[in-house]
Image (cartoon, rainbow, N blue to C red):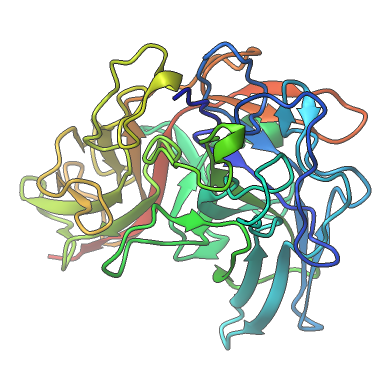
Length: 423
């Protein structure tokens, strides 16, 4: 069986689903494989990111009002989704695939917003023949919402030893931070993301699956809102892969973990109880980093090209966690890091635990310090040139052409507060 891979990570911003769930259009050049983005019928394998649009989130704390506006309302959605150069989603605007279900301001001024995300396409009819319209192979994985502050809304915190800037002050309790939109937003700072489907708790694993016809509620908590009308952009990101020939579109296979994110999909930090002492520069305290990563330990396929692989559990290239580093500003002369987990496999029921010993080498004064952890994947993204593996594909809307952008890294960040006490 010939398998066409597509989009290990794909950014999908649904511009809406007006009049209920939609169905995909039948491409004019109908290849044997399921729809792909920018991939030829040669067995080549690409893992890319594609962008379909954006939403603008407006907040007026004085009027207790929140609004969500599609930024591409008047352009055709789906033009980034191509089958041999033809679009694969409907071209009608879809205004309710991401909606605000409810919101509330806390007493401290923070804002909890409950969103509903809908898959834009209903399930196919198993009684009818499979086709470009009637199909069940458009499920996606690792659906997540990215919160992008608009210019001037806030200032990122810079961590010079890790070499990253983070918008750590705009959200609470994210699943992590990512730089994957750097060459789209033209802002190198990492932004928070929130998982829409989260398999990190419970007893079953779906690979964070978001199926055709599905809907899900999720929360984003914005920190205390200041100013008259803060503006944010919301992107939905997803992992995706085409999994079936035309005749198998109603009974597809999903090649997980290859169809999932390459970087860690969730990170949590446990700072040492009691923190560090301001007069002790030798005693180490452990920063524990909890990591979920679908690719960790997965078997790499030896089939060439990978598009011919039949084992759904194998991946095209090795993609383990390479390094976990921690920066507490001013505490150390060299960056503390580890390369080996102390326990776990990375799976939902067995997350990786990395233990990084850190001493207050420079005798930081007592206080609280915003600190950063970076979980770096060993997989290296492509160059961003057309046809390269792991590129970010973007169509900013008609009449602009498809563009290919380099992904800066496969890495997930997380912030925490380090505490230094008096002797």
